[in-house]
Image 1 (cartoon, rainbow, N blue to C red):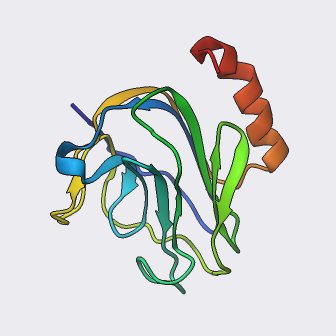
Image 2 (image 1 turned 120 degrees about the vertical axis):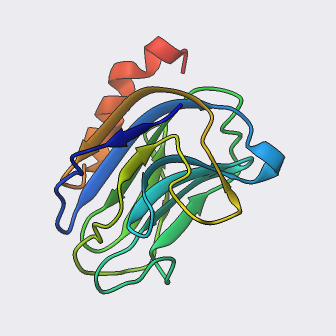
Length: 163
């Protein structure tokens, strides 16, 4: 099953998405969809990590700096807090309160096209599966949370998941 938001988040040049997830292995070892909007922004998972793509009006879909990934993880073995941000200059991925990667500099307002999906393949790509697993918590902010705010959120909930 999946969720489609009928009212899309109102964003300009910043975003944070925070999810607490335990995911199933992807089908046929392809990439799985966690949440987002095709051709705008989305969080994905693979057998080895998490990916974040966030395009702007100045930096197109999957151009330099818009697509980053945090590898050396096994998303389907335990629960993770995954937080992605775009602060008007860089895309970032945090896992369990720790910054894992920062993309190269980009600029502009976030693209806002297509519906917002949670755990559904919203793309026409044949290499992305419907996400499978459990999302315990999902939050969208219209600003980039700071590293200390992300760490605070992680510390507040980590005990629930034995982290």
